[in-house]
Length: 262
Figure: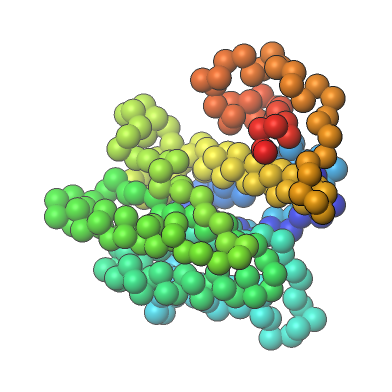
């Protein structure tokens, strides 16, 4: 189990705020994420703070850095409340503003490092593709997005982790029906899409927390704890290996055994 209290910051732009319907509806992915964490860890007090600002930039005149400072370096030190994790997504608007990936990445590292300096773990999300550009502009955006995402995925620092949202939630690889269901305008998701985003992040996040606790449970000599009762048992829900973990989560269960983590 993770700590008895888990405080998480979901930080970013419109994709964190849950923007859809030209701003008429907001469905942050953090809602689904919190639901999944409570399902996986019913004895843990989960608090999620969502700070997403539509249209905001990581670089230049954007308020990413200022907003991050308000959480990790407030003007009044008494206002500081520690987070266990910060989930950060940013860069879509910067890429659309023709800002070079190197500049975006440099600004992102400042934001990640601010959380890390406060002993807060960081889960950085890669930037998802968009489906609204055409011609040469699309090719350039795709190239620059891939370049930025590669830097995000290869950045190394203690307590820094990544989740490849770009690969997990594509646009063009989906069927036309799924694009209609999950994508709103080629940049943002529908309410169902944000739930799907929270589901995908949640599956990875739950596994990370379980693996982290499993590592902490090892003895000083590096030996594993004894196997739990029924650790080798195959549950009825596991009989179809093709069914994704997320499907099980939606049905209300999570099966994680120690042997799956070692």
